[in-house]
Length: 367
Ligand code: 2U9
Image 1 (cartoon, helix red, strand yellow):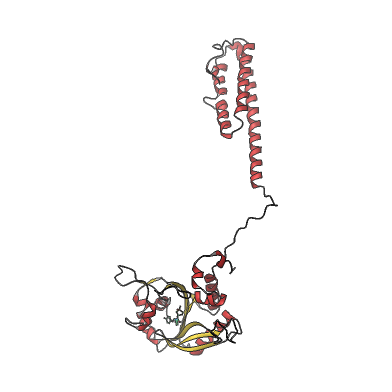
Image 2 (cartoon, helix red, strand yellow):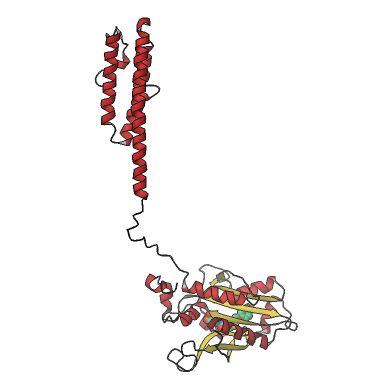
């Protein structure tokens, strides 16, 4: 209400002492209302304030009119005032209701417009990610070994020299430690280090579980190698171990050949080349038919027709001594693969760093 607020006074104070004068006062109020409704209808918040100003229970104009005009009206005028109040109230409510519906409708329209899909617009390209090549290769390797009864165990990346070296028949000062230099945890009294292979978890498993054991152990391993196209300070490995009472070299060879056929295809041939690892005896490098030239010789296999896949061998009985396994009664084989290397080989990736640079142009090539 403009200027002094007439609804704070009584009708008597406003000089509205007869029906006609009362009607005029109410007409003025209604005119004010309509005027304000007009000016406040363009903005939701302003409208909300306007609604409260008029219909507020405590200080709303209608309440004031009821309190100050109706309740204080002289007996003879009360019916007239009562009628005027009801007429004003229903007018106010009608206008507010109409506006509320209008606003609701336009809000719905806005929402509909907002949510309306203009099918002529080009689709929103939601680039669906893919599993990283290393994850894809790891899952393929895992599938192959799960299919022949191996179970997957994972172990800590921070290890002790005992589990990473000694228990694997790599005593202090053993030359095999040279190419297994790694990162040591500063301030660790026992010389905690970042594991150089996942083999420690095979030891931990044999400590806790009696034979038979058939496990594969995937995970990140660390070497203090200078990064180049095929080496990084961190890479992914999957190692395997099978120990039981009657495991022979044939079981070893059969398992390796099964793996190569599953991983590279039924025509892939396997070749075992004598090698050396402290934790296996005899040890072998496992080669497979070059998947690029099929064995006829090419740049990838340096014209040998063979690709070196991974290392393996019969478990060195010396290892059983560390896990209280009876080397007389038990035998087993083990293998170790570089997952990144197998992924590069299988998918023709020439640079190891490409696997870790998160370049979508590279990663999106392997859906
Ligand atoms: C125990 C006994 C034996 C695991 C083995 C290899 C051969 C091997 C390399 C492959 C590529 C490491 O990632 S790499 O650079 N590993 O060649 N690993 S046999 O032998 C074990 C492991 C645990 C108790």
